[in-house]
Length: 207
Ligand SMILES: Cc1cc2nc3c(=O)[nH]c(=O)nc-3n(C[C@H](O)[C@H](O)[C@H](O)COP(=O)(O)O)c2cc1C
Picture 1: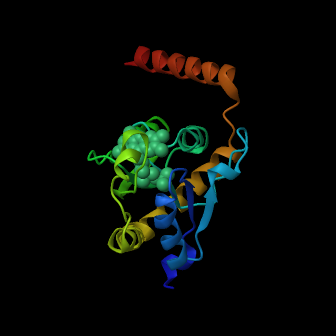
Picture 2: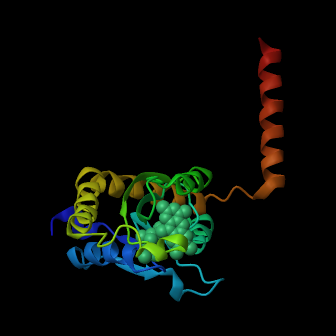
């Protein structure tokens, strides 16, 4: 492991409820990187939210169900992400549409988190009418799909790992400063703005 990999903390939150297709990607990435924390969101209670603050990379992995990431994954992303979080996605899907994580991208934008990229591949699908024809995408994800997921993760770490570490150090510093200098809430904020405005008026009177 190089220095960046050594320091970088990654969590993968996954849901793989149809055929374990997405789990195959997750297992391969985790096997190549035993330092990664893996959480099956099915093991969490409805009000149980993981603490994502230690992680430099937050990966959401899911099958596509009714055109979207799993609902629990979306709920956790909405609840737990914060500004400056770095997010990647892994998806498997049955149809032709590559989905590319558009709703995850919306959630990230709302939370001021950065969605870097989403890796996706077809997954065996026997949902609805497909079960009558023996299913779609038999044998997928295959070895190549699975190796692709590991390569994708490795590339993210290689290209962005150091940037993630640097940006996190800055965010931690900012958080520490804000903790030491509490703004004092809404009333204090209004008073500060009023003082600023009054000051400006005084200055403009001098000119
Ligand atoms: C309830 C359900 C809904 C699905 N909806 C879609 C869909 O809208 N679009 C699509 O491409 N695949 C859809 N699929 C197929 C899955 O995305 C695909 O099989 C995926 O690989 C499942 O991953 P998993 O085994 O990790 O759960 C659906 C599957 C199920 C069970």
